[in-house]
Amino acid sequence: MDYVTLKNGVTMPMEGFGVFQIPEAEVCEQAVADALDVGYRLIDTAAAYFNEEAVGAALKKSNIPREELFITTKLWVQDAGYENAKKAFWTSLEKLGLDYLDLYLIHQPMGDYYGSWRAMEELYEEGKIRAIGVCNFYPERLADLCVNAKIVPMVNQVELHPFFSQDEALETMNEFGVRPEAWGPLAEGKHGIFTNETLNTIAKKHSKTIAQVVLRWNVQRGVVIIPKSVHKERMEENLTIWDFELDSEDMAAIRSLDLGRSEIVNHSTAETAKWLNSWKIHD
Ligand SMILES: NC(=O)c1ccc[n+]([C@@H]2O[C@H](COP(=O)([O-])OP(=O)(O)OC[C@H]3O[C@@H](n4cnc5c(N)ncnc54)[C@H](OP(=O)(O)O)[C@@H]3O)[C@@H](O)[C@H]2O)c1
Image (cartoon, rainbow, N blue to C red; front, side, top):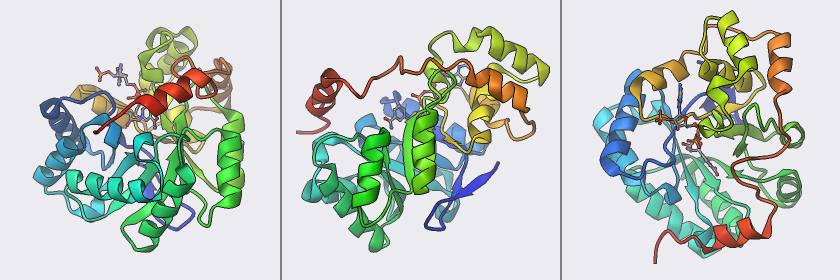
């Protein structure tokens, strides 16, 4: 397993475990317990996933020293703004049963996220969060925040997989020293990813699976990955990517699969903005 050093000097594992779409407490707790057991130390949750308590329960039962873990959660749109963000942070921390976070992310570039950012900058300066960042900030949103904020985000978590490689987004992140982190690194299983011919040829060449090839491709371009699975054998499979290397031909062939657009969510539409703003996670 490789690690990256964020611009503030904090070390982050390059591979973690995501828990989106596991709202059932028992299933989520078991998944996190299994993930920790096979060796994941970065866990990526969010207030909007409704499973921070289950993640916290698994962390507590694992007895893994806190300093070995890297815990991320996210601030939902409903809680945007300075006061709301502070309140939401303490709620998340309590649900997770932690006294500090490793990474706190703005979940969506919606609502008063400048207010949220100021609250997060303060919590960071008070030592309550080791690193702060954003999600789904496309190049123009990210550049705007980077030039206006006191503290430039350390991470930007966006959709990144072979069908949506987002080279321009990576260039902007690189320019501002923001570490890219991939959500949906397996394209959420969509677009026939696990039967794709190009990927299958590369997988056979390295005696690896398509999932392993796809994950390896992202880490080789400097992207942190957080694949999700509720199956322990897949968690292990997804973690066994640190013993082989894709060559430049493989990298280029995978790059050629880019569709240039997301098939999961288009953040540039009015419908998406309305939908994300209307989605409530508490009263
Ligand atoms: N910031 C954001 O807006 C945002 C958005 C989406 C996700 N995320 C984060 O990113 C994490 C990962 O993204 P994701 O969960 O959306 O999608 P993903 O990790 O790309 O894909 C997960 C899907 O792939 C399947 N899978 C996993 N490993 C596999 C393997 N080795 N072979 C075959 N199928 C496999 C899983 O099924 P099983 O579970 O049945 O194995 C699940 O259906 C999330 O969990 C979440 O933490 C963030």
